[in-house]
Length: 469
Ligand code: ADP
Image (cartoon, rainbow, N blue to C red):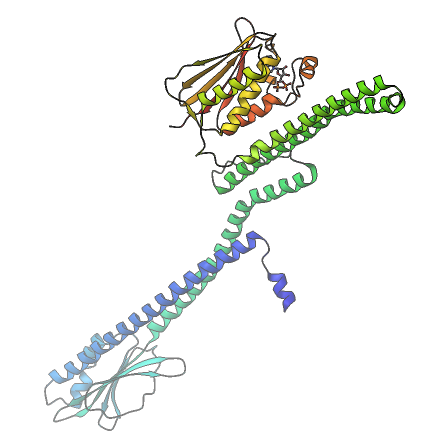
């Protein structure tokens, strides 16, 4: 039993759909047909009964109108007139008071039914049921001075039974037909619907085996499934991008870490070989190793910063920072740290500019840009910081008079670990991560960051952050 149940369990969506659609349509059809059949049955029976009563009444009226002196001969003579009243399948019998037949009128092909005789006073109509037939029998009394008896009308419900039986088979056949058709249509429809889903699961299986590069062919059916395929492809693209980025990140990070580790290794083996006895080597190597360790520490911190930024910020709609105040604070710190450098703030707005960004993040971006401006400029140069409001954004520009960035490098400076002049950057303690961090922060707040060459010397970095409305 369980085996059968297991076997019949519809595992495929197509079978489920076909069975579901078939069963639902069949049930609906069955219910509709059931009520329709019974309504027609009742109506037909009522029609039969009223037509039967009408004929019986006409017969009674016919004999009553003959007057109180109707004779047996007159009854025999009424045969022609009765033929006009009688309907198909009906039998008229005139009986005397003992129940003996005086006159019988019926079509030749109508079988005679034996109806037991019961004397009646008034009109009586009954529905008799034999083995396979239902018959209406009605009897009325005729009373005159010459003749006392009964007029009897017998009508088998042949027409009614015929119609109802036809209706029954018609409904059964169309029900079974509807069941088969709806199951078939359901199956074909489901097969059509399931096709893209099969494709999707096939693609997923390939991805599982071979990786993200596999894409699903776009489905242009403009329904939920085509939307699903689009979302799936977008998701796969994002996953692939993020996977590649992570891979690249790990490769870059290990590549960046390799140099300081190699340098450290060199110094330590030098120490191991000579340093124990030679205090000069000891001093130099220890100093260099410490410097390298500082660099590694900074690199690790920056890497963590880069990955942390995105995770930390989830809801920043209520955060804002007053740009001019933050710029002033950072510039003050820089002036203190770099006493030979000059910093100029140009404020284009008459009111404080409130940007939707956490102050510590705005400080971080400003620090990165000002630090670069100082690092990549000659001593005693001037850096100007301009604050404006443009189309709902706070725009901060950091303009230096430094070495500038070659036009070919401009699109790449925001990439992780990208350095225009490797030697100089390394000399300045740079890891090529500052601008990547700044870009990430600005973009998280819905802003933009860019750089351009100055007309004269140096370059200008500018970033936009949405302002509080
Ligand atoms: P780094 O820590 O090496 O400075 P960044 O991501 O901050 O890394 O900068 C990437 C590279 O872009 C730097 O190595 C440098 O070559 C170049 N760069 C950044 N800012 C400036 C600037 N103001 N002037 C000239 N070159 C710059």
